[in-house]
Image (cartoon, rainbow, N blue to C red):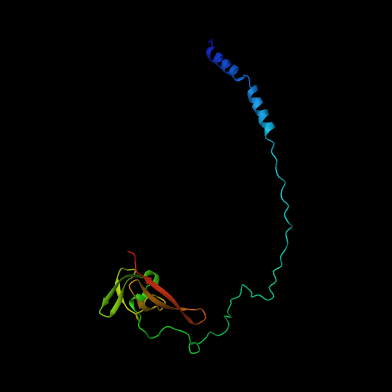
Length: 174
């Protein structure tokens, strides 16, 4: 029969004896801490009772109906006296690009004539002056100076008419 080595058993007994030491200082610290700190929770605040609200819509417009009567006949072009695009005009090259994709890159002056230089999204440089058109919304160039090109676009107003909208091409910082 094999005899067991007593060394591991003695080591285990010594370690277990060391764990059972005096813990009175720890117990004293816990008692002091418990006596110092007395937690207090404030009571919940009282909330006013919920008041119901009745939404009366007798004199208000129904938000789910359009603001205009879509069943009424649209204004014919003969009756409409506001601005409208020129129907028989030949479209220019810069009218195939949105205004916000065009960049002013320079100014060209010769005697009394001034042209703005505009780069399209494809990288081509175009020479423009007041009276030319640019942008997809019938934009007419009205002024060219050293820092910007002013354009007046003609956009639909949603009611069979058109309104003018100002836009600018500022000198590019490239």
